[in-house]
Length: 158
Image (cartoon, rainbow, N blue to C red):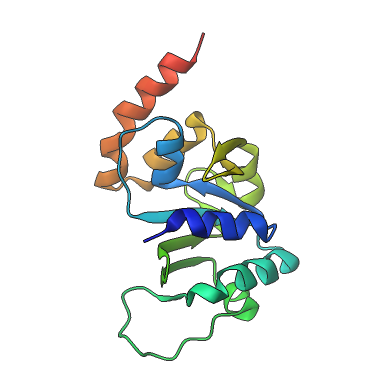
């Protein structure tokens, strides 16, 4: 698994995205571990094209479906959906066109900042937005990390 290579491929291809989820928490100093990459991506046509091209070499296929099931990875596929969970040669990648509790890509981007991570400048959620998204998701794994994220936020504030 090499999710850092996935992030570098996306950044190098000028894909507009924001890191959300576990890797965003880790960038903020969380000890939370994750085995996938969650991103919110712009749904503008030129971005869908860049996203499709950037991940194509890593053979995205839908997670949870039988092996060998026909699947076409392209801009059209991305245009026809908003939430995708993929297995790739680099690891599991989840693509979200919007985020619970935050909204569309533009709203997610407004609650983000640029951080140095994975050897690149990467846009990631700020702590307040990450906490809001985790709370809205409401899954046990999201709720479990909230106390740590809230204490990181408290330590960050003057």
